[in-house]
Length: 400
Image 1: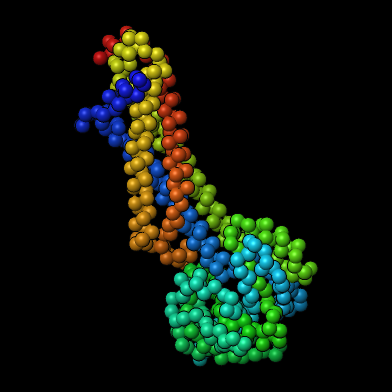
Image 2: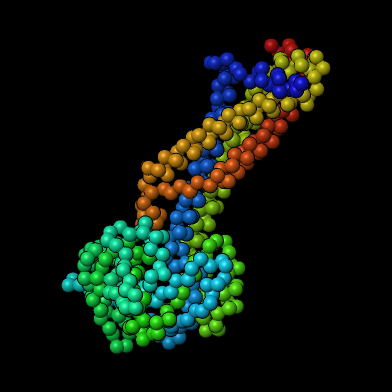
């Protein structure tokens, strides 16, 4: 029979309204609030990172292959990419071509970037960003003048789905085309919403005099973004000397560095929460020891060893930790679920790239946080129990 556990169970249920009951509630509250804060911080951080990364990858892929530019930077050189879709890590390869120009209506002129795409474009991933109208309907073997424009540009040019607009393409000689806006999108990210509009790649090919199998570049989407370095190396060795391969996270390094700063902030928050929770548990166990001084003296007088008495308070502390973890999971995951389903907390999209606080559930992270708090705070419990060896039985019994 485990005597320490038996005594701990008998003494760990204080009467309501007593000082000991208050101390137990404080211990449980400190653990539960600490876990709830850490859980929310991690789920929000993962939500931010995955949402922003998804927006970047949806528009640019994980890797881009283009030709080196020389001379006029406004004119792309055509590239041809063959047989790379046989790499098992690659999900799909999406051709594109950029064309710089000016949108003009009766009152406004706005510089934009025309991004030509074809039917390989992933319309399913793009659909959440479409706020009005529909996507482009490509014509097999022909070209369409339909475009999808950002909400920011549509508001500037007073356009809506179904509007016609003139675009002057910058080349020699300049070309002008009448385009029809069929859809309006919004990502909340300046890199895409400020100047980018989507159109038919065949229009770019015709304006540049390219062949049907040529494009300005290729966006490469991977099954697993974690394999990007491996695929980058294989692409670098496989493509021609005149082609250039670039990782998306290096092209948009300012965005990904900002995401890494969020990691640092969350790590600091976790350290602070763990420190406070550990300090609270040390204080609470010390108070419990002082409150049970007479019991400790009696046990010592009966021949109990210090290690046996220490285990009594360690078991009591572990019990409080477990109850606090259960309450913290209910609180933290409950608040996260409310935000996930109802988007209660809004955000300014101009600063945070999204309209509400995102939540990304990762049960491995939740389990890891529970294990971290349980392990660290349980180990800390042994520190205040060292005070038990200083208690002398005769003084402790007389203490009451």
